[in-house]
Structures are given as structure tokens and as C-alpha cells.
Image 1 (cartoon, rainbow, N blue to C red):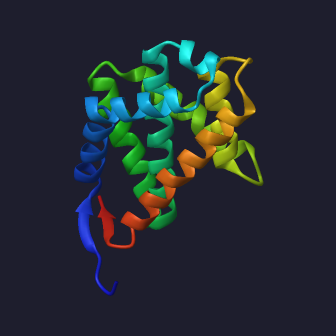
Image 2 (image 1 turned 90 degrees about the horizontal axis):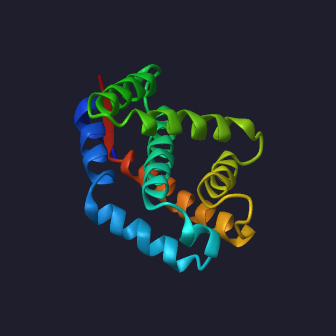
Length: 158
């Protein structure tokens, strides 16, 4: 695409946050959880699961923004999102984002896989099936691919 549509960091992130915190998204995440057929995951607290899915998704968004935008736009997006979450009493999600960011950075080979295993361990506990972590790894890659595709047509501005 020759020209990319310009969008503000605030507008882009607000749209993503509203979508991620919607009942529709929560229902899709819940259906995915059931499809994993993992007793440890099924028994996990629903709020813990949703908060971690949101945080992992936001971390993937930050990765896509950082890799597809000018220097500094990623940190502006992170600052905006953390402020937005904190203002609404969702500071736990911001803390979880930091955990997933560290997990991503901990692997020199596959940060998304590290995030997926961290997710499974954090939400389902040590008894999770490795197939569960693999399913989340695949899911996270689908989400990240979709975000990268978005950036083929938009350019974020502060």
C-alpha cells in the first residue's frame, strides 16, 4: 500500500482497549478456553483468565506497534494504555502486561512461545497440559499476525 491511513495512538489504543474489555471478546476467550480441554485451565478463575488474556493481547499489540512504528510511538502507546487502565481501576492488567513483556524478552528464540508458557503456568498452574501452552502459542501468533496486517494500512502518530 502506497499511503497509510494516519491514526493517533490514543484513538487506536482506545479502540483496542474497548474491544479487548468487551463481553464479546470475553465470550470468545471463554470458548477458546473450553476448546483446550484442559482440566487445570477449565478450573482456573474466570477473572484471572480474562485479565491474563487481556494483558497478553495488549503485550502483543505493543510488540506490533513497536515493530511497525517510529521510535517512541511504542512507549507512548504503553504510557497511554497504562494510564487508561489505571484510571479505570484495572492496574492489575498493566502489571500483567509487564510480566508478559518480560516473558517475551526472556527468550532469544521465541518470545511469543515464552509468553504462552508463562500464561498457561500463571492461569492453569503447574499441572497444565503442554498442549494447552502450544494452543495459546498458536492463538497468540494468530493475534500478532492480525496486528501486523493492520499496520500494513495504518500509521500511528502521537
